[in-house]
Amino acid sequence: MTAREQDSPELGATVRTLVAPLAATEAGPVLLCLQKVQEHFGYVPDGAVAVIADVCNITRADVHGVFSYYSDLKQSPGPAVPVRICAAEACQAVGARALAKAWREQCEGDPQLAQDTGVDEPVYCLGNCALGPAALVNGELVGRADVQALVDAVAAARSGESS
Ligand code: FES
Image (cartoon, rainbow, N blue to C red; front, side):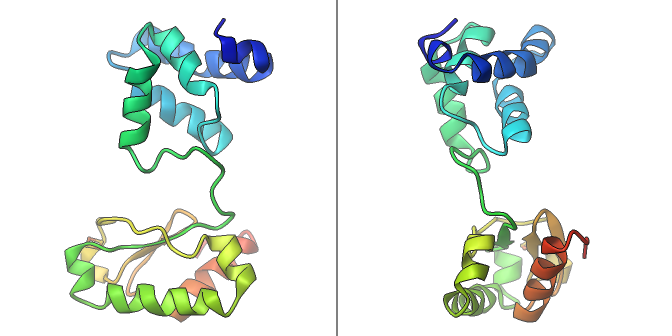
């Protein structure tokens, strides 16, 4: 048991239950363990890094190195309906920068929208280049996105519908 687990034994036990099967069966399981923890909690809570290091029998620095390298791994819960607008070249060529600017302005005028969506976390290519500008709203692709399409997708996600 790590020192952090002594502070929060329930968290430590949950993390161990999640990652032990991966550590036992996968080669180089650190990223898979971090992804599994994030899938469960929605982020990687304080203390999980130490447990993963212990279970994988590597240093916390090694786990932290992987954790800090991947921007998709989060240290805190994300927004309720995350919006990510593609900032890669193909989408830039068809207006992604203007869309991101217009979306920020939309959020500036609607604090609840800004809070619910986190405004925009850029992402670099969603594999939807032919339908740029592309965006991801609550994990759902939006092609040929404009502000209204994003507003509609956020509303659909809030109501539990998929777009
Ligand atoms: S460049 Fe935007 S989806 Fe590929």
